[in-house]
Image 1 (cartoon, rainbow, N blue to C red):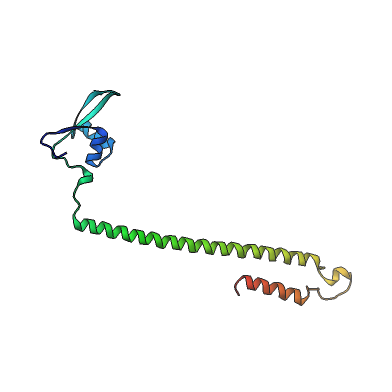
Image 2: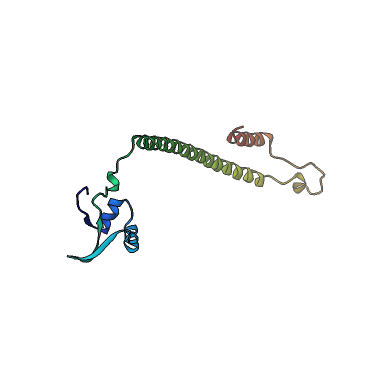
Length: 156
């Protein structure tokens, strides 16, 4: 747009050149910050905005080398941070899966223990009413086997 006269463009084109939204262009027209007029087009009436000849499109603005380097550094940092976060997420997913597996195994062991406990008489007293015997416990081999499996699952 570097011509000697002003250019008339659509609101959308003005927004692109100025690097703002179409709503901002409309607000500037309303406040008088930009000059515009409605014109007939093949599709009906449309607003056109007058841009000064020296208006440089925002996307063609020259970027200072220091600013460019700072932006490139920022992008590199954000890309590295993103990679780190993806690795962290994957590690947490793996840990969650291992925890789920361990929880399932513990539920199975608990059900087995409850079934074993339910199959055993509560005490000798229940079997021999009137006897003053000590309560009966599961066999030591069954107890230690179950406890060893639980400890193994718990990482101990």
